[in-house]
Structures are given as C-alpha cells and as structure tokens.
Image (cartoon, rainbow, N blue to C red):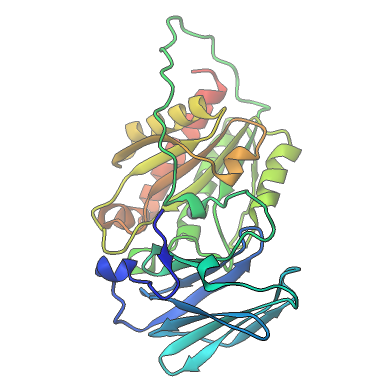
Length: 341
Ligand SMILES: [Zn+2]
C-alpha cells in the first residue's frame, strides 16, 4: 500500500502516468464506512488536497480534469455536512468536503492514495471506527499467505448431486460505481456482470438454486451482498471482480483467486477449473481480508478474472465468447466443489 501525503501526489507522476491529458471525473462518492472520498476519472489525474478552516473543509483539486455537472450532497454522515463537486476553473475540478460543526481535521490526518492513475482515494481519519475493508481498498494491499498444504484425497469420494444447493453469485460494483476502469475505458462492472450471468445459467442447468446480488447495472453496497448470502443460508458465495493496476503496466495480466478462512477448497476448485479451460496467466490463490469474504458465514471466494489494465486480459475480457468461457469455467469449479470432486 503506497501513500502519498497531502500535496505530494507524485506517485503516479513517477510512474509516467498520463497526467497531461485532460480527463473527466466519471465517478465520485464519500464512503462513510471507509471514511474516504473515492474518485474515478477516464484519464490519469493527480489530486491535490488542502484544508480550509471556519468551517473546516477539505479541498481536493483535480487539475486537468473536468466534471460534467456540479453536484452537492448534504448530511452524508454525522461528521460530514456536505460534499460539493464543481468545476473550479476551466482546467480544474474541485471537490470540497465540509465537516459538521465541532469536528476538525489536520492536513497530516489526510492521505491521498492512488489505486490507479485514474482512481484515487482520499482517506480521512477513521471517525467511525468501522474497521471493515472494502474489496477494492485491498486490491493493492492483499496479504499474500501461502495456501495450506492439503494432501490430495487418496480415495475417490462418491459425488453428491448439486441439486438443491444454494449458490450466491456476486458481480462486483455496478451502477454509479464502475469498478476498475481499464484499457479503452473497459469497465469492471460490465465485464463481471456478463461473466456472472454465465455462471448462474450453467449452475441452474445443473439444478443449483442461484441468487445474484445484482442482475443489472445497479449500485449495491457490500453489506446487503453479504446479508443476502447469509440470509438464504447459501452453501457457497462467489464474488466476481476484475483487477486493475496502473495503465502504464499493460504487462500485468492474470487470474487471482482469493479466500479468507473457510474458502480455500472452493478457491482451489474454481482456480484450477479456470486454468484448465481458459487461456489466462496464473497469479495464484491468495488469502485476503476482503469484506465479503470475512462477513459471509459459508465458504466464500473472490475471483479476480483478469486485469482490465492488462494488454492481454483487457482484449480478452472485451470478447463475449471469452467471458462465456470464463463464466462456464467458474461454474464448473463450483460444481466440482459442491459435488465433492
Ligand atoms: Zn472490483
């Protein structure tokens, strides 16, 4: 996890990001659980943050970035009175977060963090003391722990029917949250919904009851995704995402499958099935404290199907037949797990 301090947003400049191009702010929100502002543009940008007093305001300027229309959101949380986004001058979009009366902020409590050249978090102190982490917040900070060595079964286990089992499929992001935005503007939210639909179709053909956390381009928070899975007592939860790194790293491509505690066997089945059926690089099975993995009560896995910023992956993920292949491979891995194979 790389931090740049307020006023020193030089990380992506050092990486040769395309900061000279004028971009448009395509998504922003204040996330009260994470106590941060999330900003996504269609081009690289380099936010600069500073504090104004009376009332306390955090100002984030986005040079070389325009915003299609000004917007105000008020009474966002107990601590944040308003967030305003507007064109400050011809070249600059300005985001102003105004704290509620009685709350103050120092510049050294604010961190401006680049997830990708076009994707930034401005982290405020954790007033709310909620420790749960968003999946995307961890994309750059996953804990890589070698998976436990589980010996291959020596005897063939009789296969169970998948009929009657309940699987929750969780396409990441959606609606105003595009997820990662990669090469040619490829958006994670669309890629993962299409793949999820293929997973769902194949599972249903095998008699599995499938619930999706979203079936259209809509924004769903993380908590209701988890609540759905826990509420229907799903046997398995599979979250489907696409990965991203800097647009200046087209060389980074490949599949990553994440589990937290109980999902390792499931992760193994899905990961192996994809590698057998789909032409994708193997970046391994990894452990990470993603919100949806930590808070679900059944074996749960998060699949990062590839990098929307990767030259190889982005081209493939744009292709409907590839997304179908990927979906079918994930479904087959889930079936293998459910059937004890
Ligand atoms: Zn994602």
